[in-house]
Amino acid sequence: MAISQYKVGAIPRRGLGITILDSRGRSLDISTYTSISVRIIDPDNTEVDHTGSSLNLGGVTVGRIMFEWPTYSLFEKTGDYLLEVILSDGVHKDITTEHTIQVSSLGRVN
Image (cartoon, rainbow, N blue to C red):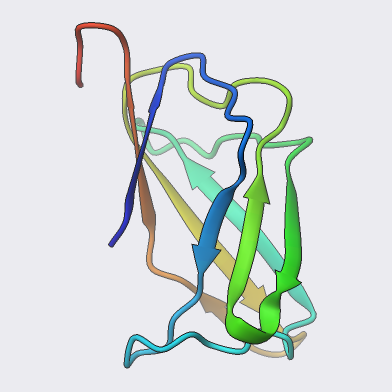
């Protein structure tokens, strides 16, 4: 599992690259899904509103998407944020394992 690290108040310029893997660790073609979305929860297990963010789906045939951050910070407190990708084809819904985002502030780690 990958871990990303940011600071409280950060507004990342570069998107977060995400590769969807199958159960054998191989890149999965996710182009057959009709809906791809992201869910983020904060260290208090509260869903984070990420209005203004977007997904770049240019690499879906190789399971690669890019989460583009909104123009404001999602990181209001220190601790581990969890991000998951929700994939749906209108009938089936698959949810990835979570990606950990560690958020700290100067001199502190939760």
